[in-house]
Image (cartoon, rainbow, N blue to C red):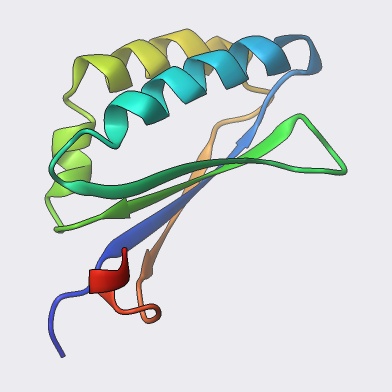
Length: 105
């Protein structure tokens, strides 16, 4: 089986008073992240029932792309900005893309 995209879901729980600032910082990071050659998608999703909860869906083209992403200025700025806004540490889960075919991303 050929190498498939690495998809990471990052679950984030934000303190209520920081939801708007978190969203602004995260959207800025996402807009820059999709410009990276190793990133195919970077989605920002907010829970409809609990707006303090987010899921970031990151699709990487190679196994080493997440490490390269974590060295970018926009990621480092995002991390340092949003870490104190979180109600608990963020939780990443890694998945292998199975459908749609990677070319569809």
